[in-house]
Length: 136
Image (cartoon, rainbow, N blue to C red; front, side, top):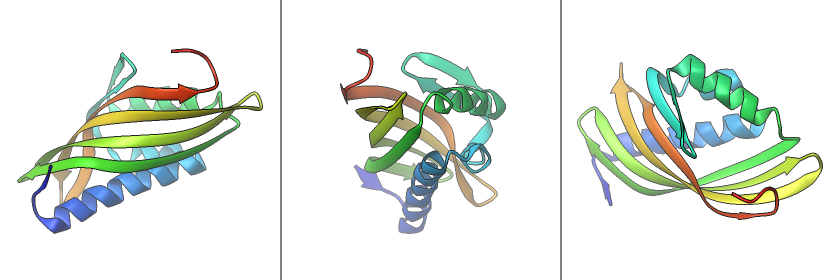
């Protein structure tokens, strides 16, 4: 479930950690810098192509929340040269209109290493479980 050079595995783990931190701080510049220009983000069935479009969707989604706490746990990571695939579990606490919601989700990821830096090439996200908020 985890394979490839440890240096690359650590770099991708730090990519995930930076992602979580940018969500917590609601920082679109830091968050957007983690994606390739032609990246694909599938968010619960809505697919968006291109970094600019992805950041625009994220800004819209984040604007509905009063606060977001976002944590992630890697479930798998397989590196082959300058590409990789992985699975990532998320735990979120979201506050919308003063009402808390807890959500757990799963990302299926594709990564690419460009100029020595790992970036998200494709992320497919689905909610696995949720407590509070709207029903899915």
